[in-house]
Image 1 (tube, rainbow, N blue to C red):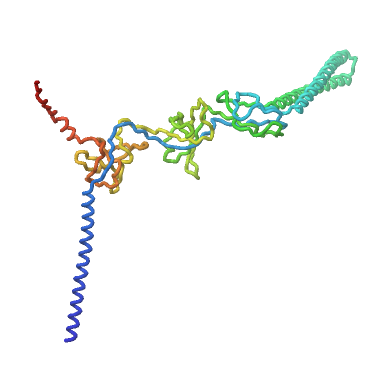
Image 2 (cartoon, rainbow, N blue to C red; image 1 turned 60 degrees about the vertical axis):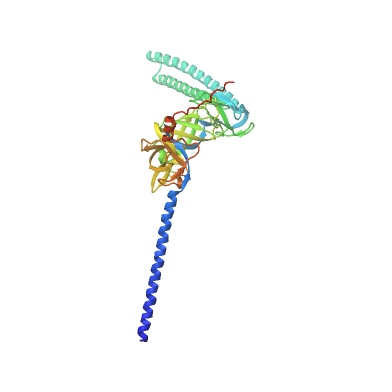
Amino acid sequence: MKIKFGQRKTQVIAAVLVIFLGYLGWEIYRRGFAGKEGQATGQRGISVAVEIAPVEKGTVRDVGQFSGTLIPKSSFLVAPKISGRLKQLLIDIGDRVSRDQLVAVIEDEEYQQQLLQAEADLRVTRANLEEAESSLELANKDLERAKTLHQKGIQSDSQLDAAVSQHDAQEARRKVALAQLANREAALETARVRLSYSRIKASWEKGNEVRYVGERFVDEGAMLSPNTPIISIIELQPITAVIYVTDKAYFRLKTEQTASVTSSAFPGDPFSGRVARIAPLLKETTREARVEIEIQNPRGLLRPGLFINTQVEFGRREEATVVPVKALVNRDGRQGIFLADIENKKARFQPVTVGIVEGERAEVLEPRLLSGYVVTLGHHLLEDGTTIILPQTAPASPAAEAGTAQKPPQRVNNPPEVKR
């Protein structure tokens, strides 16, 4: 009996425990489900204050935004071809330079002396040539005389051979004098050229006739060796903007595309340009390609080294459906907008397909016949069908406008005039 009583007691306790655990699970489930249902009900029941904006029709542009820097259209260094002391520097930083203008002078006493020496050597060589030609003329006469006497049998063969040898020797001497003359003339021309190198000019073949001094590297009195930079010459009209683009924009860029360039130094003053050159490769280290944009700079405002922003237009659409970018939202993995139902004061979620995005405006490709007003602020609290509170400046609903239009004007009865 004691064993049966213990077993029954254990069964009762187990049954009570099972009932308690079941009740506890039911309460947890009920309260959790009721909480979610209440939350959903509360979400649908609240009213959310929003801001709205109209759906518009207009032009949108597909514009690429890039940043870069300005460099000269062309730039080169002016350097001497000979060594010497810089005697005079005729221009300085920022000065205008014309084509073939004299910019510096190197001491030329040594080269003047070399020129005089070359001229003296040339005179000596010419005198030697005159002597050789005179001796050759005498040798020609002796040879003719020897031939005549040999024919008459007066001179022997050996005497004739001696006259021929003498003539040939004088002929060779004349040829040597001619060669020496050509050598001395070349030496004189070399001396003149080296003397001209002491007067340094800024020369270029193409481009504008006027350029500017960008930098000065030495001062007057400095000892220069060949190819020591003295100044740099830059061209400012036109000027070149260098940008670097990734592969996403690289294949959309074409030469001769128009570009608009702005600088923080001249806010609100854009400069027109065109894509002049596109590098045929992207660097492995940066995965970017170099692009050069030629900018017209007639006033000379833009200078090398300025930071610039560039806009390149890839395309545009006229009469496109446009909404503010801040109206776009994502719900359940879908991109869309909330349309404001003005009459019923409800928000309706509308999935959309976005096209070109230009600044704060976005093109809507689908649906095409989109109109009305979209929510631009407060949509993070919205679901499809949520009640909205419209701003005071919101337009009236179509029904209200129609009722106002159809309501007849009220008649005002004037009181009867009282005669005195």
